[in-house]
Length: 132
Image 1 (cartoon, helix red, strand yellow):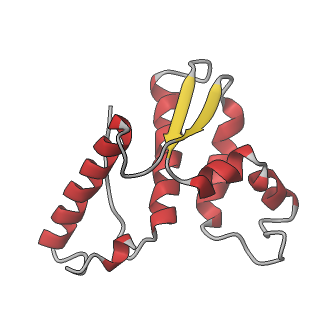
Image 2 (cartoon, helix red, strand yellow; image 1 turned 90 degrees about the horizontal axis):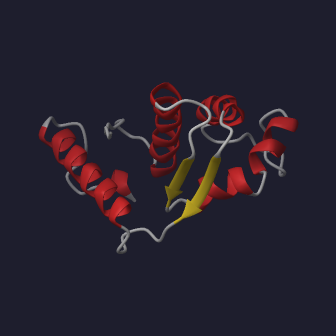
Image 3 (cartoon, rainbow, N blue to C red; image 1 turned 90 degrees about the vertical axis):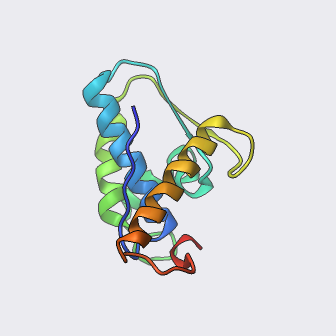
């Protein structure tokens, strides 16, 4: 099962968070909370936030980073924080982006198709600045 989407002007982090949120929602609905789920991502930001307990710290501090600055994409992190404890067998793994991991290649292909579609509809700049 796969789906893709886009949001005009969104950062890479925002779209990766959205993908994680929607993926967790889908897994919960389709296979349930007790199914073994492995999330493989090339985003160290997302993986570190979860595996190194940054997320728990942000929650304790009222959605503030250790610097006191507000957490970016707080609404997405809040949705993810509600979903994570519902799973009983959830693990997170890192993969190098734009390398030989077939899943990562598949996701990049879906991203490129969506960017082409959005460009075709006049939704993104031609120079791909939104991807950087």
